Image (cartoon, rainbow, N blue to C red):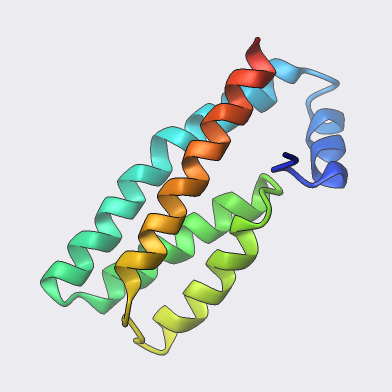
Length: 114
C-alpha cells in the first residue's frame, strides 16, 4: 500500500539529499505527535471544547498533508471542514478511522526500516 504520494516522497527525498533516514525520522515524529493530538480532540469532545477539537484536527491535517500521506490527508481536510462548522457528530468514528490509519503508517515505517 502506498501511503505517501510518489511526488511528495520524491520531494521529501530531494529536500533531504536522498536521506531516507530523514523521512523515517519525520514519519516517526508524526507517529509520536498524532496520537497526542487525537487525545486532545477526544478531550475537547468530552469537555465540550469545540476550539480544542478544531485545533487538534487542523494540526493533524497540516502534518499529514505536509508528509503527503494519503488518503488520510483528504479525510482530515473534510473533518476539519466539519470542525470549523462546529459539527462534532459521530467524531468518535472518525477518530477510530484515524487510529486505523496510524496503524497502517506504523506498518509502512516498519517496512521502510526492514
